[in-house]
Each structure stands twice: as structure tokens, then as C-alpha cells.
Image: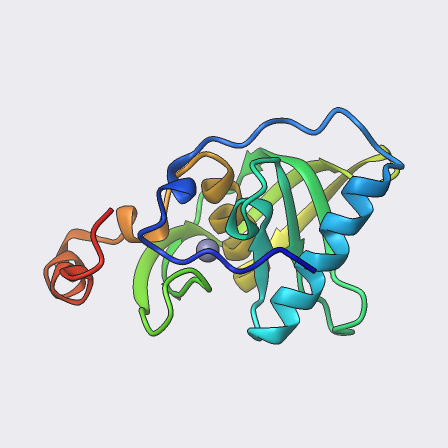
Length: 164
Ligand SMILES: [Zn+2]
């Protein structure tokens, strides 16, 4: 495997990922397999392809069985329920940084699987948070940019030596 976890402040993390238009594909399957290994290696709940250097809209999210993460390709939030909550959040690309981000606690998401099928699913709590975080990655948005103002000062101090 020649893919590695990309860490802030690598400028790749600011790129906007492309929509996936090919399915049942060897390259796509290999990417998903590499992402699965890397996510488990670093004990992550979720991982976006951009974090391993591929600018395509692919994310993995851990399920109860670590051998079978959920693969979401081209995920789009189709409904955001009203309730928002400040949730503790971290990112594999920011080792050691935890902060609080305002996230919807329930969302509906439409996405493709690796075979090109389309699904719509409701995600709650930490899983809703994870999908929002990974879609942000696909849009080049990092969780530290979403941190609530009251937490921003302490975060700026921690990130001082890690600028883009
Ligand atoms: Zn992340």
C-alpha cells in the first residue's frame, strides 16, 4: 500500500473533491481497502479519501463490526433536522486536537455504494456528526474552521506551529 494518512497542514486537505462517476472499479475498490486499513490502524470513526491523498468523494465510517465499515460515495445531506448540538470532535489529520463543533444531531443522507447503487439513510448523534465532518473534508473544510468562537482562541494557540 502506498497511501498514507495526510496530516494538517498539508495543503491537499483544502482541495475540493470530485464526484465519483465510476463504480465496480478496481481502483475504487483498492482505495476503499486502503482507507479501511488506515482508518483501523489509527482507530478512527471516519475517514475521507482526501485524507489519504485522493480527491474523490469517498468516505468510510466505522460500524459495530470493524471489518465492515459503511462506505459512502458522493454523500449529500438531503435533510437536516432542527436540533443542533455542540459536540466534541477530533480528526485523524489533527492528532491530539479535540474541540467543540456545532452539528446537527439527525440528518438524512443520500449516497452511492461502490457498485453504484443509491441509498438514503438517517444518521444520528455521533454518526450524523461523522458524516457532516467527512462531507466537510470533501468540500475542503476542516473542523477547526467550524469551531465555536469561544473555543477558537485556545485552538489557535495549539495550531500556531502547524499553519498551512
Ligand atoms: Zn477529519
